[in-house]
Length: 613
Image (tube, rainbow, N blue to C red; front, top):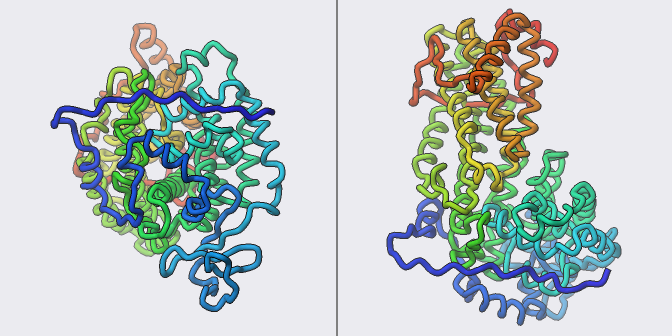
């Protein structure tokens, strides 16, 4: 295919705010995260985007710029030299023209006193020669709409998931699509296809084949692992945002590749360009988030160890865009809000990682068994400081990230953040309930625990019921799919472990209300809710099998209520024992992704549930 310019339309610029009452996003972020050091003299964040693009165009292909750019060189890739590799430049011997040690077909380059990389040519790696062919195939699928899809990606997705350096990407795309790695190009097109109808020009054309595009994205990202760059990590993460297929396996591969690129190390004072320092930090934290939420959804251990994680917190200067890059077209995301959203998602993930480490490891399982009848007390002790951190996190949220903080013609991804918060709460409560169900628990304590858990389940249902179109149609983090499923499984656990028939009936009504909300939102276009709806349908069939007559009666009552115009399952109903205890300990997941793992079931439900055990 002939390579022509695919430069995307420049976004309309937003005027700088005149009023001093406009919130200082940078100040809000700085309160949440600590500052990091910069070694570069010029930061792209302080220039206008046009000036910076001109500087980039003038220097990006120069030998000096290529030398300073570590993770995105066009014809070379790098490999981080860990502390056990035993390679010391002082004893290597041979040097190249830059006074760098030569090792095989690569050179060793140091970026500070301790951090070194092996720089290796791409040529000669497996399938390197077919990259151009792959790029042509990818472009052929979307042609002639490549430029529009790139524009759509930056309008809707990039603001909330900023793991690309936008000026460099747009600079390279202005020349030719063949300037990119195949998986990055394919994954960007793939994510943008979800928002095809948001573009007034695209909506009149047939939508490209997403199945073929995903196949090429997955195939080429595996090829890219042979010569990994920062774009390889971004492409893999974009694929995971699109689909959960093989999520745990691809996540594990990306983490391994990320270690090889040094994304776990502190790059704050490396001798590289300022924009790459910020990009490395954003990519590193995106990988950290993927690891934790994937572990939550799959029931597998986290792969990133806190003791080997030295990436510093993000600051305002770590992002490549500011309010001047805001796109005012309807159906766009907000740049400044997106930076806050990404930063708060990171801090929430850090709490989740601590929950998984404190409450869901094999060591904790042994401690729980050793505690015997005191297992609940053990879990409550572990949960209390985590719940306090979670509450402080919620209090610290700025008004712009509230569910109500939406602009009229803008998309809002703040709802995705709130869902992840609710899932984190459920994670804590689930673990406590499971500990209580496995041991002998005082009846009064059980009522308190169940009441607190029920309040969280009700909050989650009401949240899903309250979602508006501009929230449903925005970008949602990939964890949203599994978190919706996790909430449904939590409702099943509440129903399965309660000792009261009245409470069980109330929980069944709540489950039906949740199912109805998922169904309505899915039919309204929220495709990411489909997997959770399917899982909940399966769980509900198990409950129906355990008490067929009772469940049928409830279904008949719901049909009658729908005729009268009422949605099934009124969540305002209270349980016989349930008063809301806002201060009670909150919690989660077991050692398995099976929602029924480790639960002592009520006898009359066991027969129907045992088919899933």
